[in-house]
Amino acid sequence: MMNKKRSLFQHVGLSVTDLDLAISFYKNVFGLKEFTAPSKSYCNKANKIKRRKDIFGSQMKEVKISNLLTDDGIGIELFEFKDPKAVLRKNFFEYWKSGIFHISFNVDNLDETIQKILENNGKIISKVWTLFPGCQMAYCQDPFANVFEILNCSFTEMVTEKLE
Image 1 (spheres, rainbow, N blue to C red):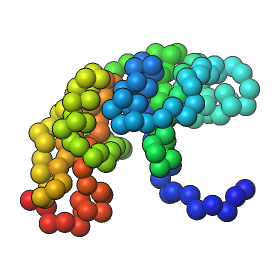
Image 2 (tube, one colour; image 1 turned 120 degrees about the vertical axis):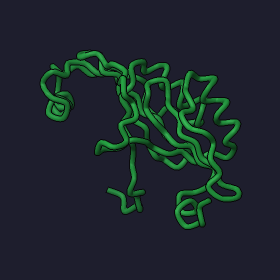
Image 3 (cartoon, one colour; image 1 turned 135 degrees about the horizontal axis):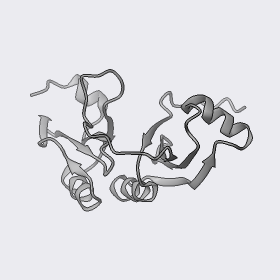
């Protein structure tokens, strides 16, 4: 094993109902690179599948997975569960319940990114807010109701500046 310093945050996993559409969305909107092509896994073969059954339960029979990467090596693991079939959430933004309720992307140009989101079947679910001069943010959804935030400033700038 190499002694290379690794980033603490490695990847996020998202459940989607159409893997090809999800790949297209994240590539077109954020410029993510496809690291692994879509592949099907069945829960009746090999040790890898035993692991997935252990994680997802015995009811999971088939899943299609692809992995995308940001330029700095952070992964987005996309899962299209085939059996049982993935379904869209009806109440997608239950922020008051524990668990992850959004992920965040740094973007250079909020307006351009919003246009790309809309062109790729995503939604903008909040107004564009100015947090402080030079820093704007908005909450959005991918086509599968996964919520994400877009910001045109860094995380450290966001939390250390005097917010309006």
